[in-house]
Length: 241
Length: 40
Length: 229
Image (cartoon, rainbow over all chains, first blue to last red; front, side, top):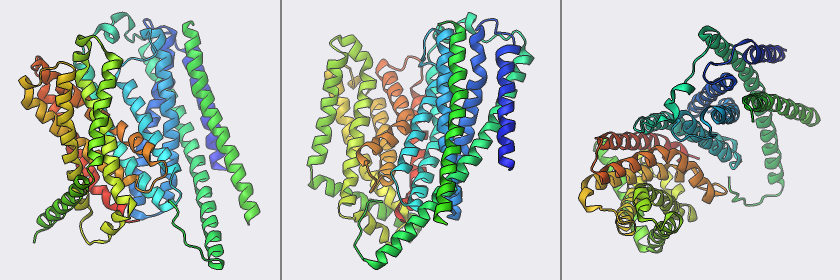
């Protein structure tokens, strides 16, 4: 199957990229080996944003076309996006400890923005989980996903501003600024890791979408069964949806 | 912990997490396929 | 009659209805205000007794109290709708959805403005902060902040109508979205109280305006989808 091939290719790409990032590329002249964490960290962040963009667009697709397949795409994007966001934060913390001396830094706009991103989309997933009716769930999710997506640039902007007005030496400390021994190798490795992660993302998205479709079908079957049952013994229902 | 420790922790969790998620999806899909066969 | 005029009439009518309902059952307003007061008190215990530290933290404490109490207030305002299916009945009327949203957000804004002003006064007293000297920019900040919380709160209250675990989901959804508003409001308040030494007050107020506009538009545009099912 084509998906399986995609999966194998993605796996191979990740293995190759990891090998290059850990073994082939020289360590950073200022940040040392810790800088190697940047590769999966940046890749994860990039894919988190891509995922949430997909979720927002898929939400619009549902609101417009009323086809639940759009919602299946949306939930896939959100779940995978949350995963990559968590990875990005974890990577950021693992990088921060050796380089900054601390796991967390309020002045780093990306770290704080990513944490907020996690909060926004975990909320999205919880909202979905608490809604049983597929159409209502899709609508609620689409709207919340849209507002979350709209909020992200505002968050970025405000946090950058916040940081900009605070001239402290912690981040700008000269001996910790990125200084790759071989700039081209650094960029090349980063792009390679990005490509490998994107392949993995695509594979996971397809699989998650397939799962979502199956679960929709199962829900639909369950609904039909309940209707048939209800016809045989009518009962008033005021269930929370 | 040395720098290498943090690098391993970073890569370990991220790549391991990807693998675990892929595995989880595969199992859930297999379970769903079996249920569909039963239902059919 | 033009659409804008009729929309406005509808919005004002709904705002009046919500505000009157709230005024009659005054308990909710009073308890929300008291909640804010208790929160401020606890901040005092948690961060005090050093008055310099509290004064420095005052802008943050002000807006945290407003936001937390605001979540409660929004929750209460919309509880009225769920309890007797009023929201569904409202949805049956052939009025523009955005007008319904605007009306509810307006009522919410009035509540939040009152809350914000009272908390501002309380913070001035409790944390020895001189509000009078910067009353105009502080007023502007409170107005903009109140509008933002109301816009976002009304929207999420609509989303969580009839949702299980509503009490925790409403804050969980609202608060992350409010982060930039919180940031901007605190920074503006700080700058105002310090006499705006770096000239940043205008920028922060602009951020608040942008946030408010975007959230009101987003809320109005999407509220209709929430009402239709």
